Length: 340
Image (cartoon, one colour):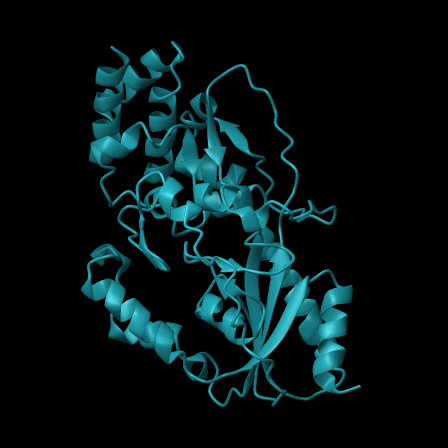
């Protein structure tokens, strides 16, 4: 059995659902796509993306000089929602964030590297959720294909996966890239996106995307989005929930034990937390990641509260009228006007 097959077998046995291999060549098409989105003002300036950062993001050889191969993997995270019925307003968490699946995958990949080292003396680096462009690498490794919502879809697990990889300086035979496009004429994700962020197939306007807006305080949530926001606390999965390709995905039993939040979090107790308390309480979950602004979480919680229709929201909103964050105050003022 050749090493590539041994790696794939061990990955599957360790609970990694899909594995494919590709070269460490630069991602020229992804570079052009990002440059186009920047030119069309579809990516906020505050992300700090520039030519240097795009090059690093799309150049595996910068991440590991001398790299020859990349082992790309996908871990399915789909689970049945165990809804907890709270007698108070809650904020909704996007399904991929109900628990920390990225950490779960990273640990599996780290164990896989130790296994591979019993067969090879090469160098290896694990990456999950950055700093390389994982989606085009997954396509090139034959794991999946792009949906019109810009998310990677797989044949057995739909888009209910997180991606990660291992880059190495050993040479492994690459798999054929995934050319399938099951979307065909379907455009349900485009039609049902609450804010119309999918402006054309495969192109997303991040300034409109609730997933992006929910984690940053620097972008203003337009007034016409605020009712559409409903009770989201972090993330948005509408484009995936509506997709027919996700309807047959079977819930898993082997789930990440890290950073479990569940599908909802009560927002009034959350708003009483300091940033330190919040990051400690949810330290293993993405909602407390360094790139997620605490004021954005507070703003989202207040917006969910304003949209709840619950009378207990009023005193909490009034108390936040003097908040030090302008974005928070703006949402509170809107919420109080909306509730009158």
